[in-house]
Image (cartoon, rainbow, N blue to C red; front, side, top):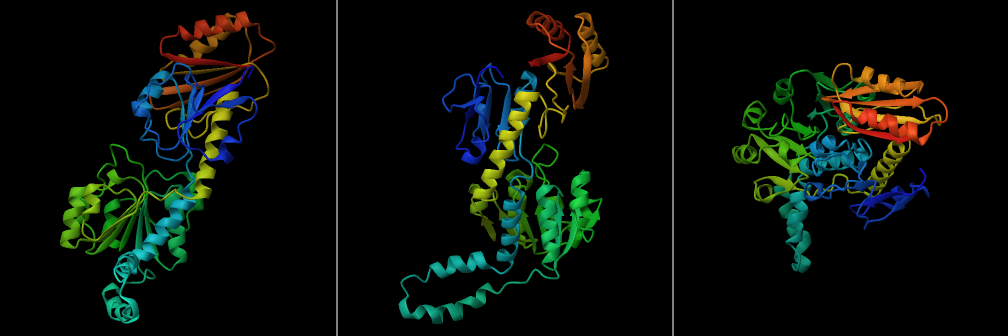
Length: 394
């Protein structure tokens, strides 16, 4: 890169992440025309995307705060950091699993009411503790919905604590399948999980297909007094339906990391103020991973962990490189290579990967290439019907 590339943080980002950017980059939180932004929870839906913007790095897994459709239409890849905060969330899930079973949250809140009781406190504790008799998790069955970076860790650790574990994930990746203990019983129908478990921990993204996944119909298939832990997204559980299930005792307790006005008023609900990924280590890991993804894309065009572009990479050997983001339609690759040939340039290496309605092509070219030849090629590529954006990396 011949000039400094401007990175604009939209939230407070860990210094360990920002410090990874080399002297080729300028970190400027006041930039009007940044080349890339890095953020955590900032709401980009209300932001006018600058014309200069080439990439977005989300230091975390969820991207509900980013207008993905707009970014895709403009050819802007959005990166997230799956797995970087997985240990932090897993630890809080396991903590909440045990603490809620032993009625610790309620007990601690009750103990606070004894302030000012003086010497009576020890006696009051001994008589009052009876209302907080809990249950042990050993020998109970945990159902884990979603066996990704977090869900697999939750499942494995629950096994170590003596629980039986049933997992459901029709889209489990090969990598996660290798990491998942063989002792986890996998089912291919979520209803099988519902009818067998004492606890449910949900770890899937919030998309139209999963909104309200745990609803009246699901609760009716579960054991009475099931405990539900939601450390993924609030919308995965239907608030109105679980309110009724809690009142009727179908659901014994609901532990959510996403409080709202309804959950705060629900019976037998523990509302945690979105602390799942709130650890120093998690914030550092996410920031570092997002910075690395942004630099890889800006410097080489390689893509890893984008939520709206396909993963695509070629080893960068210093050859002049052209990237193209385009509609995933027949003959597009042949049209691109034909334009390269028509300006008398040779292809050294290339790759093409698709994701939904779009595809991404990386082409390495041979030899030194004059600026005029590059400009001619870019104009030809941009004229192809279905082309969204092109980039030249040299």
